[in-house]
Image 1 (cartoon, rainbow, N blue to C red):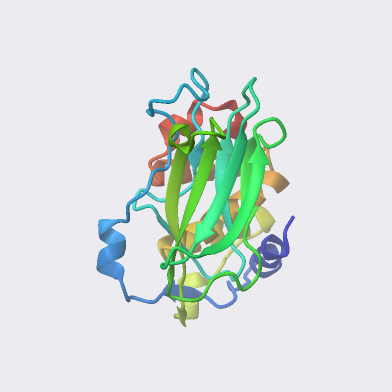
Image 2 (cartoon, rainbow, N blue to C red):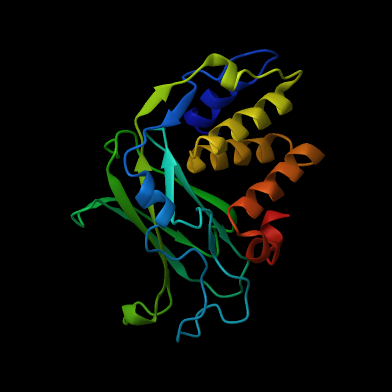
Length: 234
């Protein structure tokens, strides 16, 4: 588990604890956030035969295509189906000028299920938009055949809000963690809400409340149907 995930649970777990640095994102750019950014969250539908007949690759990102975070090393999550063929997967993060900030390579043979790509610390500058690309390399000699997902990431500056708004009246770790995830989600911090629930899934895979909250998250992300097509998220 990453240091960021540990921090969430050190903060969130325990009865009656406060979510440290209880936050709301800054309001700058709210209109643009509501309108959304260009992007693509679900693979398939291209002219390429790449991964034909398999469940799609799905990016866990809001329908607006931009995820917000208060972390200085957030993760971007993808669901990669179990396929027979071996395909290289390329993740790339670029700044507003198109400069490469971070890259990582994966492969469908070794990277399957719910996969998080964690950015290195200090990769992002606050209140700047970064675009990520996740490519399924169908033909290394012809990039036009690649199936490419894309989305945006923004690290936001935050404001402290009334403690009562984020008071966690939880009786155990699971309830506190779920309350933390809901607080992030209510504040529009989708990346942090996803990260928290991923951690809960890892710690409590059979807990009914965790599974229900996960399904509610998928519904809120408008990804329930494509995600349910993959056994990786069940």
